[in-house]
Image (cartoon, rainbow, N blue to C red):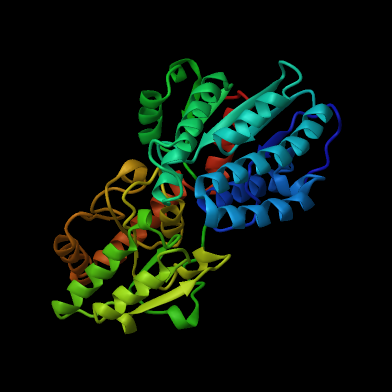
Length: 389
């Protein structure tokens, strides 16, 4: 990271998660860090893994494994409490070093930790809203906490206590800018802006030889919320209509065995490639004809932006902030997530209509360059955090 003097005013990227990883949040952190580094702008990174107490994570992990078997909500509590404690060790040192700084928190809990470390009025705390509606809902969707259990209520209380106290909020979609104030009171007075996720351009000609000419690709954790079963059913219906299409699923997760069994049951096992976990998942996109997405809720979806960067058209449900990523019939198509047969028809129309893929691919590249390219959006984010816009 960039070396700073004690009088510098850095952006401190703060998160409970490590910088390396496959989630959209981690990609966002890395892309912003890369932007700051390329322009030699002052910054620091604060995570539990940068803390002097990081070795204690091994103890937290071991205890969490035990609690996963005994009591899943307790395991969630330990994950949050343990990581927050170690993040505070790192942030407290950095904020003591820099009396003027902006903490760019990646979740409400990391924002809460930052607020507790503030030592002067010139230390500002901002939050980027990555989560879908609430982090409580995301844990609920994973099936590890109850919808109205004590852990979910605790997370929502934290949202209400922390978010109105922030200096600013960065929304990655207009959808969440409109939705979150309906759930958390007091946000109308918090300075905010809609600044989408962003990535560096992905060369469209950098194709893995084994993937060249495949049809569909989708990236994401294999879990219920991502709804990959829908994709398998669409592929099966296309086959029953006489069109055999291939599908590449990049990612791993609790639903993998279920999805593999469903692919075999539907008679499409040979058409579906389970790529598993991949640190550089976006490299799988070029070479495919379409990026397909079936999540039933999405704040924005960074993988969709990565598809645009590779000039690959998108098929996705028109939910959440996805409708802000591309326009119907221009860079892709919206398909109904409650009707696999109609979705099959949308898929076949795009694949079989002369010139459709080429035109949509060119439009995808143009949209990416105008709205989601790192050098453009990264500057907007930096200027907003420092109060320049």
